[in-house]
Image 1 (cartoon, rainbow, N blue to C red):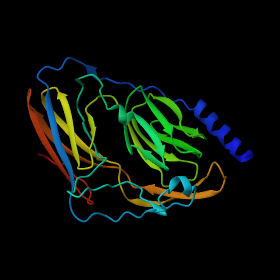
Image 2: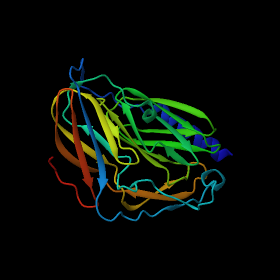
Image 3: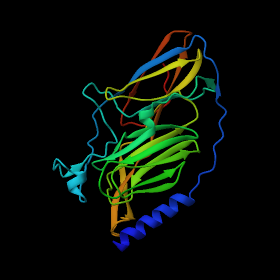
Image 4: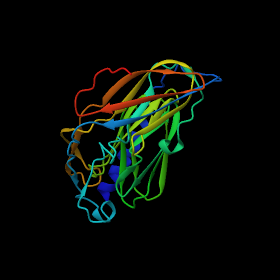
Length: 277
């Protein structure tokens, strides 16, 4: 119990003193006249890499209620029609447009049966992310990247909020020994972002007519090594996966006034290259 209290105090102190610097944003909100829509898909090409699951070796009564023994890392989800879920599709060179309207479901994280839900978050720059745990065990959400927090969740149904005041990518992991738990959060300055659904579909709406670059961003699915850390509850060394760098595919798109442009991405295990429509 002493170790447990010490770990919580340390995590809380770190959370309190870690304050990312504010980000600058040059995006201008305007009234969009004759806005267009971009729809499309992200599809997988070629053999789907075999994802090696991780052994559930802690808190199995909560983390493994169906006795599966192992947990998928959820880094690459390819559907029956080859659609790739959890790909972030966004406009790269947009400087003005509609007001921020990212889905609220992408701005909240829940920890349920030792999983992060959802796996990919989208939070506005200077927006608030809501973090909750439905599990009656200790979790710690360790953020690294554009934000650096270590937030303890010792009780079920506890909620913590944080303002994300630096644009960029944030990795989320659990420092309480649940080494398979992982998610990604993008803190973004404009609303033209979407996360593909289970069939690989995406949709961007009310886009000012014009020429843009559109990018499909995937977190990456390869495990390239193992990192050693201490479980904050037990102070025992544990190993957790180290993932490969994100993958990016870029195209050009012309958005017509009051019309619809279609952009379809085909991604694979090969190194991405700049593509054109």
